[in-house]
Length: 183
Length: 280
Image 1 (tube, chains in turn yellow, blue):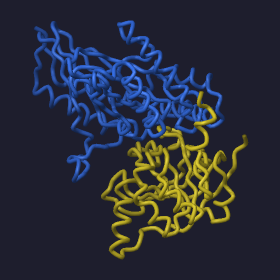
Image 2 (image 1 turned 60 degrees about the horizontal axis):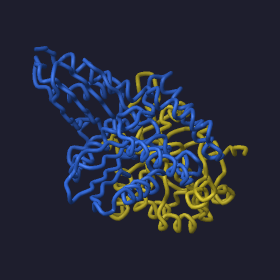
Image 3 (image 1 turned 90 degrees about the vertical axis):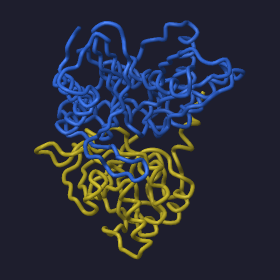
Image 4 (image 1 turned 180 degrees about the vertical axis):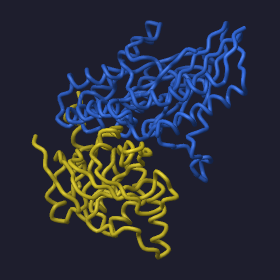
């Protein structure tokens, strides 16, 4: 299977063209956010406070990186378990979020919201923090500095390897692949 | 009587934190290599190769294999002929962890209160288990435990009548439900018997046993072998995206228990299953 080069931001048309099972290499700007940042973003939205980033067609990467060693851009930066963000995700999809990247399955509620917004979910290899660190070309703190590793960062990535796990039609590798190898 | 200074302990623990997080043990590395050779799923192959590439980058750059550098668990075996000089033993172990996480640029992932959730900034407290032995030995086992896998662990108080079949069912269910989020192919630590907390403790310590080692009792060895085979037939595969490698190893520990009970604890460990030990 070949790999598909994709560039962020991902328009609705870009997203709809991706199919579950596609192996991709992502380049461009992506944003980091995990548990605490999601909680704050959605709590703020409920209070009428705007998001610190324009999410339209953007990709959120679920990661809490290690501190950068001197001379490095960032520390190890692999994905965390996406399911913990499920509660907050539909609200962010309502605000234009186009794609997410992490590890593990998503809830039915998230998948339904993904279908309505034609969003995609990428899986990348858990624990591959050192390799992914080497693919991050710049990192800029955007918001919530007080959250430390959980702050929102803007990353520029190059050829970041991922797999389309759930596509905009709701096809889900967690449902389809296991059966093929079950004995 | 043997005297050990707290400075020696602090230094050893700090080095062990960095070593465990940046360099994979030989047992885990060869298990991953074998998994890659056996794998037949396209997703699985791509994932296992990425995992191997990651290990090379981590060692080369001396940075953590995984950004979740864990909450530190220490098993300390200390001989009753050992005297600690320079301060408190527990304090020295905690200071060692703080120093290692600071100097190694490791992520601080510990919050001070489970509900209020503010980061302690030092990755302490570590969880410490003491075991007093005879003689003068001082052996530290250290496991930086990531929570992607920890969160998928489970404990069940089975009825004795559920027996071996019940034990197998519970362990396989836990593996089936947990492996995708636990960064499969996983290492599974199991504790059977004792009391509730003893089972959990055995399951945790079982993760520190090198892969390929076996329980001394024949019937438990067969159980380890059966579970490994059965788990790898589930089809879950690397990261849960399909394949024949769901589990790299299953280590079981057992202990006498009560006539009315059959506790079983399953502690899930990811494919890096960081564990180091050092004798001072």
